[in-house]
Length: 103
Image (spheres, rainbow, N blue to C red):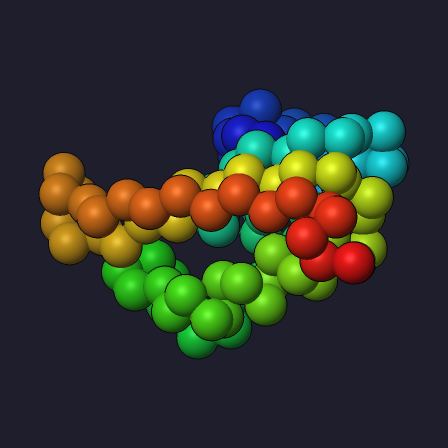
């Protein structure tokens, strides 16, 4: 996923992007995205996240991904959570969930 406001604003904005992506998501086996992607493109939220995405609690991020997997039949979800220190300095991480691990 890669939501870009400038590509969607003339045809319905974030709400329309979420509608379209939610129609496409059931056709996907492997979903890649970061916290902003899951929020903007599919409408999921990470609880406790500030507007600058300066700190993501691992447990809150995990709960959001679990909600995604419950709603859609993705076999694999790969994410790249980050902790923004400045505009150019970030701590990056990675998570990979396979559906069979959650069953």
